[in-house]
Image (cartoon, rainbow, N blue to C red; front, side, top):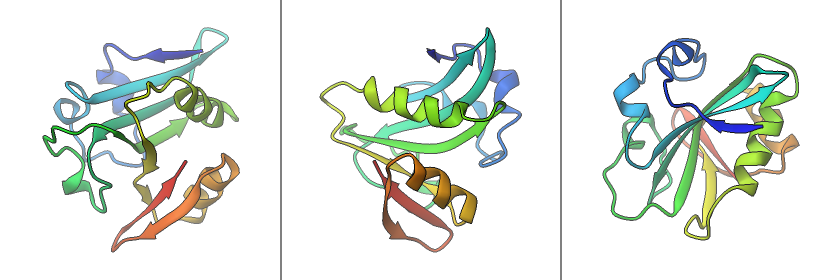
Length: 135
């Protein structure tokens, strides 16, 4: 079950992808922290930023943009096998018409590539330290 995490302080400490992003950047207008619940336990967590551009580096993530038609998945981690994939699929299915694109800002790792491609994303672009995939 897809659920918005309303008090994410403790869970966000577990972020293995972008631990340097502080709590105040992750929550608020045009930002969401979502989780997948399975058997009444957190199975996976997803951090999303809605903006008007595809970011190529962390400093471009939280631009105060008037356009919010791109959902940027910038961090995801799983506590239970398969829950990360379920969370991404549920997120895709839940997006309103205003969201025109769903992209990632992923680390340049084989694990990230396999995860996103397995879930239907395609390679978009290679950046200096990140990779963008598009769903």
